[in-house]
Image (cartoon, rainbow, N blue to C red; front, top):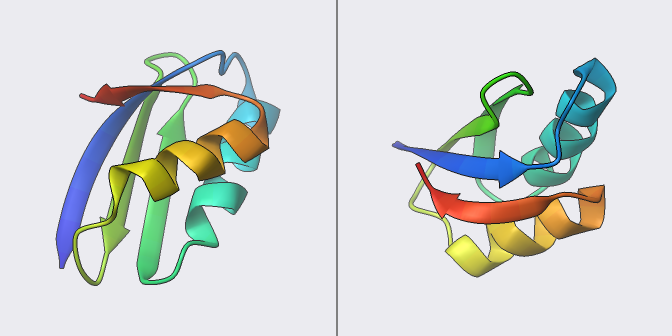
Length: 70
């Protein structure tokens, strides 16, 4: 298992958290996602380390910007 925390900008509410969680959670191998709008942190648990660019694309698809690893 691999757990990585990312900093995401633009999340302001529960709907934002849900959108990011849904998009990142759809990536292959992801087993859990916790997005917290108040901190801008998204913690992702996966079967193996994820490609940062795949996570960036998922966050972008949700309408937000991945700043980088926290």
